[in-house]
Length: 256
Image (tube, rainbow, N blue to C red; front, side):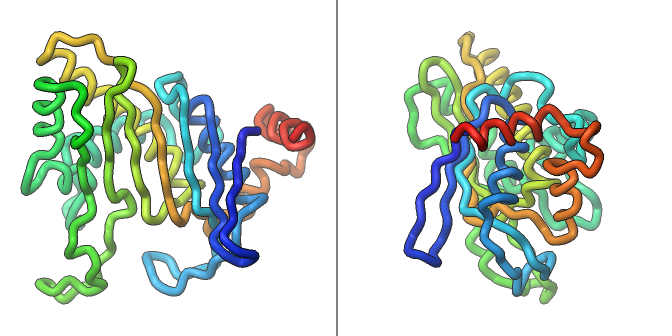
């Protein structure tokens, strides 16, 4: 299994790079890497104060367009992913009790998605088309205006680049729930990229395709409450129910 590790000191940050074929493969390999190699990390402040296992992770997906976009073992399905991609990423609509979504940050006060499309219609060799979700005010733990607790977005930015007639996305997550969030996030961003490319193609009469998805996260983690779920995924109690994936990862580990 293509997992490359680099370490900073004996007790420093453990960085792992994982190369995957498609989105389901990426989810399984990320979970497996964290489960086997992850550092113990106790969250002291955040949306969930708990014990976790985490890695500083780079995840490269070569063929994210491959279907299905989500594994049947993931805690989400395509209906949810389609809703998430449209509502949370592309349009920016959310629930009434939410102060923002990724999409609302991308669309207001500047419609970055629209401007990115316009830029690529004019010039496909543009290196400056970066869409930012995180804002400077997100550094505050308490919103200065509302005096309420504030949670910054996990997805910080979406960077874009066209190479070999394909649109490649590079995204950064400051914090990333590997079990429940990652499968929907990567599948949703693939749908986002497909809509993004389709809009550019229609306006500029081009034939662009979607390319790689590359992700970086300093803290891609598994929560303690998810430990049993992940363990069952890779180490089923009933050997007859052992998934093809668990067998494949086990065999890959023996070969490496």
